[in-house]
Length: 221
Image (tube, one colour):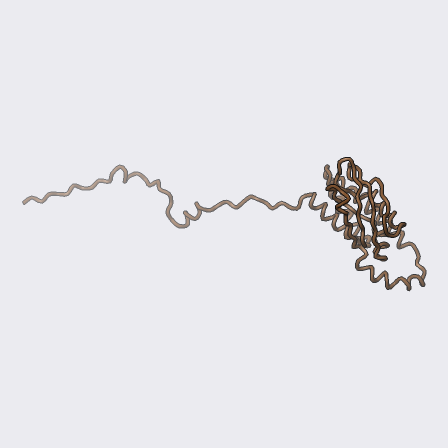
């Protein structure tokens, strides 16, 4: 009986072609599956936010000339902004803070009689902790959507009013640009009240009412 020979299996054309499949090792798969790190970079506070933070620090008040000068330099750093931020920063850096520094210098240069100093030591010490705290409340019934946006006061005025725990009611006239054009004292010390009205005319700012408005508000120290 003849034995049938099995034909030899020649490698097919497909088998002879080099493999083009993707690498299968775990290391290669991991390398291929890596995701590029995000290129997003956290943005710092905007110029407007920086200005608001500085305004809040200014409104908190300080009688330290060095702290005021440092705050002045921070406002000056924002002056390069060509918009509203730059204009507001320039107002604080070039007008308000220099005025406060001048007030502090004149106060420090004024001699205080020893007898008066002893008599006023206790009230001054009691007021020192809250001398820079004041609240301005707008009577909502006297306005039509007008909001008080800025109400800075010189350090010397605040210190004087806080020492007496003063309270005032004012009637202010606000023009269409939101600036105070005039006002009168409804209650409280008339002399210091007129000073508040004058300061409001210099630097207080309301949201711009159409055609102007008359605003009644209270100020408590």
